[in-house]
Length: 147
Image 1 (tube, rainbow, N blue to C red):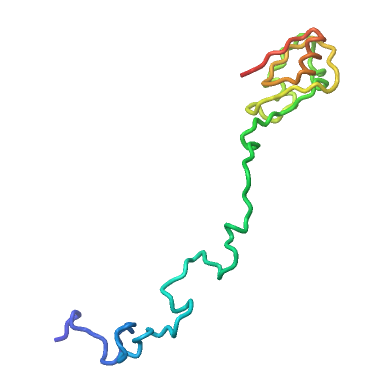
Image 2 (image 1 turned 120 degrees about the horizontal axis):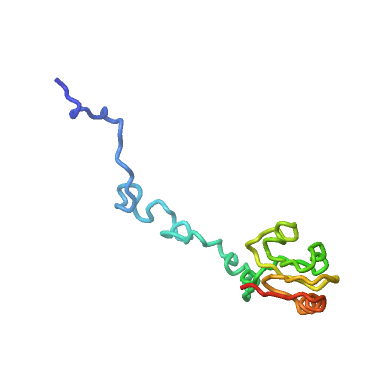
């Protein structure tokens, strides 16, 4: 009775794999079926080799360093926009967000000096231009710089 471990392929159904460089009698001896010399006869070329043209890492320019991505990006509010608040109001970042002057409470705010302010306001922001601070204080208000 035949068993599973005794099964094998029919005679002639399989053949051994071709082994290169094992003598002339195999038909793949000598140059191992690669012909004579040249790039394709060598063992390997690097995957980044571009056939002798200038490599991409040398074609691309890369010069210098730019600090712009590390710079603080402020949301700006002009002094003329602060006129909407009542006199003696403490204008905070939260109040600016509620009134639609800025888009986010979590990004720093800088007050700029375009326009006029005629009301005494206490303005709290992360930065002020020199002109904005002068205009707010001239109207009787105060400037508070946040951390």
